[in-house]
Length: 283
Ligand SMILES: Nc1ncnc2c1ncn2[C@@H]1O[C@H](COP(=O)(O)OP(=O)(O)O)[C@@H](O)[C@H]1O
Ligand SMILES: [Mg+2]
Image (cartoon, rainbow, N blue to C red; front, top):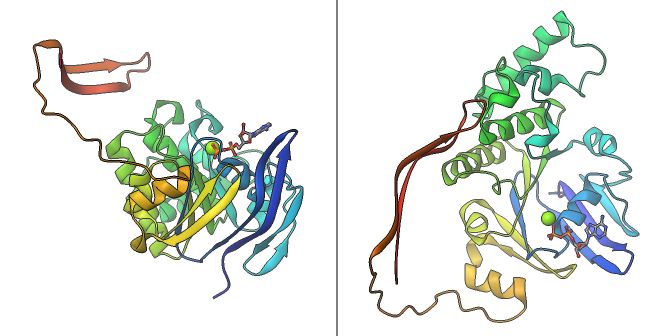
């Protein structure tokens, strides 16, 4: 089957920094493809080229087999490529519905268009388990839900390939697990997902295939089921990595800090810290 996306010989420099060196990559349709690498490996640059934020100095992009010129994010969106940004791309005082429609319809947010959009939003939310209240104000939603709005927004614009760049950085572990379920549903419904991360756990948990970048180069692509964290860590850093640190017998000393049931709400009343307990002991 023709891949959803092919990047062929992509090269990009920022002055003296050679951010992408002759990078080639094929993303299978209806798969979750992880791209992993240390900070500065060139992952975001590569995705920014695919989404039209940057132009490659050299190389070719094909979308479903056809050569594509992607000079702006509108070009990318027209080709069915969506990018899930962090919440700061949303407009806080607007509702979920208004945010989803914004940029997709152009012009004023008027009655009939909004009613149609509401029906479409409800359908998308149902099909992809992306439940969120269309009338909630975006600024009052927790980060995990704001991210769902970003996903809905991309789907609403017709994305069949979704790029997520380090999407779990702002999420709690529970929110991250929920995001993974959503990504699984998207894949099962035939969407293609590109997941950028530097977290090995996430790669092993949800990807079908994984590509590793190191210092601007694409160093390997593996079926996730045929690899493991040790191999991936080694490919990321370019030498053997000892992941299991040999621990001496722990003899915990006195408790120096104990926190019980701590909750902290921000000015908007959103619980940013919710019923957290932990203790720190001297070693
Ligand atoms: N707009 C830019 N201008 C100059 N250098 C950049 C720019 N964007 C990225 N870089 C550099 O390119 C390299 C790759 O960065 P990036 O693609 O963000 O890596 P990653 O996403 O894997 O952490 C880094 O050295 C980074 O500092
Ligand atoms: Mg990055």
